[in-house]
Amino acid sequence: MTASETDIIETSGVSCHAGAEQLTASATAAGKSELLAQFAEDYPKGPHDQPQSMCPAFGSLRVGLRMRRTATVLSGSACCVYGLTFTSHFYGAKRTVGYVPFDSESLVTGKLFEDIREAAHDLADPEQNDAVVIINLCVPTASGVPLDLLPKEINGVRIIGIDVPGFGVPTHAEAKDVLAGAMLEYARSEIQAGPVARPEQTEAQRDKPTVALIGEMFPVDAITIDRLLDSLGATAGPVVPTREWRELYAALDCQVAAMIHPFYTATARQFAAAGRALVGSAPVGVEGTTAWLEAMGTQLGADRASIDAAISTQRSAIRAALDNNPIDATITLSGYEGSELLVARLLIESGATVPYVGSACPKTPHSAADAKWLEDQGVTVKFRASLEDDLIAMEAFKPDLVIGTTPVVQKAKEASIPSLYFTNLISARPLMGAAGAGSVAQVINSALENQPRMLAMESFFEGVGHGQTSGVWTPEIIARTGAGGIC
Ligand code: SF4
Image (spheres, rainbow, N blue to C red):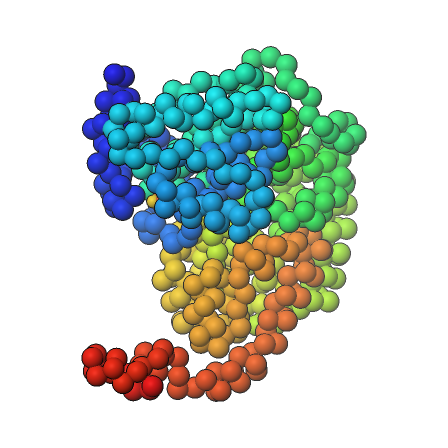
C-alpha cells in the first residue's frame, strides 16, 4: 500500500455535505496542505468566507470543454457531477463530460485512483486528443486522491490532473485560472524541454510583438484591442484560456500579457516565470483607454509619438461614442465574472452615478488601478462581496437600475427596480474602446425604460405574492396550520 492509499483510507469519512472546515482538515491530513496553501495565496478569502455562486469547479470544466482535442473528466460525488454536467450543457458545451464514479469502497481502497488512471489511458488517443484533463472535486481532493501521481503523458497525450475543491477555490472565475495556469505550466515545461509544434499565427502575429489577452471576452473586444495595439506597433496574441493546445505556446511567446481579467493569478505567475511583462486593467472609456495605452506602449517599447497619437485618436473616438450614448441613472453593480470594475468605469464615464460595485473575486495587483479610479470617484468597491452586501447596497442606494447576479436581480424585480443580469446581458457585449462605449449604454437605457411597466405590474399584483398571500390555501391547510386566508 502506498502512502497515498493510506491517506485515502484515513480521510475517507468525508462527504460532500461535510463543512468547508472538515473538508479542509481532511485534505490537509491527506497531504494536500501545500496545494491549499497555494490556493490561499492565489485566491484569498475574506472578509467573507465563501461568496455565493455556482460550484467553482464549473470554471475549470468550462475551460476544458471549450478546448479542442481535449477530454475533460470529473472525479467527484454524483450529485456534484450531475449539477456540473447540467450547467455545462445549459451553456452549450456540446461535448462529453467524462466521469469516474466512486463509492466508499473504491475511495477507501484507493481503487478510485486506479479507475482514474484507467480512464486517462482510455482517453489518451493521439488521433483524438492533445490533452486529457482530470478534475478532482471536493471529496476526492479532501480524501487525498493523488492526481499528481498520474503519468504526465500517455501515448504522447498530455495528462493534466487538478484539484478544484469548493473549499479552496472560492469562485468559478478563479477555477478557470486553476486549469489555465496548469496548462500554461505544462506548455512552458515543454518549451523548456525543446522545440514545440508551431502555433497557427497570422502574418502580423509572426512579424510583430504580440500581447496575450488574459480572460474570456466578447470577440469584438479582442478585435478592438488588436486595433489599439496596431497603433503601438504590436498585435493581439491568443486569448487565454486558449481554445487549443498550440495557442498556449503562442501565448507564452508574447511580449506582454494583458491582464484584462485581473483574477488569473496562477496564469500571471506562468507569464511572469516566462519573463513576460504584465499590464492590468483594460481599454475601457476615455480614461481607462488612455492609461492602458500608456502602460502598454511603455511595456512594448513604443516611441512617445506613437503612444501619443494612439491616445489622441482613441480619446476623441471614445468621447464621441460616450457623448452620443449618455446614461442618466444611479446604478448598483455586482457580479462574479471579474470584469465588474471595468463595467463600472464605463458606466461612470457614460454619465451614470455608480455608488457601489461588488465583485465575488478578490483584489489583485491587476485590479488595483481600477479600484483606485473608482474609489476616487466616490464608489464603494467591495471585493469578495457576498449576496448580502449586494442586497444591502441595493436597499441603501435606491438605484434606478441594478446590475447583478440572479438572486440580486430577482430581489430587484420584486422591488420593481429595473435590473439586468451581469453574466447574460453585460458580459455578452463589447466593453473596449469606442465599440464598448456605445454598446453598454444601449442595453442600460432600454432597461431603464421598463420602469413604468414594472410599476404598473406592481400595482396590478398589489396585495398578493408574499407570505400568506402566496400559494394556494385550501380550507384543509388553513384548518391544519392555522395560517393562510385565501383559497
Ligand atoms: S464539488 Fe464541492 S463545491 Fe462543487 S457542488 Fe460538489 S460539494 Fe459543492
